[in-house]
Length: 411
Image 1 (tube, rainbow, N blue to C red):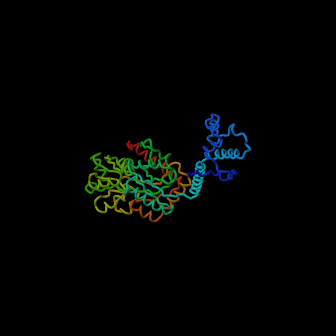
Image 2: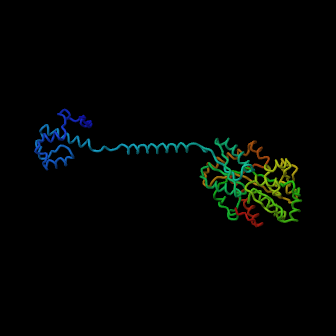
């Protein structure tokens, strides 16, 4: 008959040299058949948890057989008691090791200089426009100086509001930045019904560039310059349509300033970005538009658009034959757009300082200046404090224009 494997204690117990252990049936025979049905015997058996009964029938404890029975019960008790599981201890050790590794990794990560991973630069307008072009060239130059890719993330809509909302909702860790413009940053949030406050929800990191616009029209549009435009608009107030890349954007407000200074009324038709707007001007569905030179220049050179004026204080190098608005009968007129890099409020100062240096170095490179030349752009060299004062001054100018002309710029 197959026997069960002995307990470890059976192998090392001092009684192992005694005769082989008998099973319960043989032990009952040894004790005498007269005890098998005895109630006291059965009670003793239960009290010993199935072991050998030692009650009042075994009195001579010095007897070797009695000693062996005592030792067998002791061994049985030790072998049948549940052993403590090692799993909780192993789990605790594993958890402690994991925590130690995580803490070490955190220390190592913090010890590494910023940035340690790619940076996302939100461009709040459609691909192909001036803001997108500036953002991509800036991102390329910043990548070289920061040692990490700068990924462009276009978030157009609502004249840049959607992109800036995405920026302020991001973690303030320096890995999400926004390319802000005069139309998205130098604004009064109450006056323009914005869902964010530029003064408190974001940090001005660094200025980038200022650009000026071109006033252009479909070739079939009768006026060929600003003087002729003013004359026609006064004869037919509100009958001439002009497109913009979005309500409240810099091109839109430049047109509004032109109307205010010339005392004329044109009909505004906003689009979601410059590309679809200029497409409709080229096709003749809209008469005219104020936009960046980069978008208009290829069409002007091809004869599919005509330039009426440029909005800067000086003529553009790429369109030297086109006069300024100031030369065309509105003295002192100059309006355009400016761009800067912004971060969510709460971004650490040391990270902002690193970004400021990277931006300033990027905009001074010959590659960047050459790329923005078609926009009629000029790089801005301001300290962080000067940039802050510049934004405040631009905000006041914009607010005054909106209030004095009762413009509704609800986004």
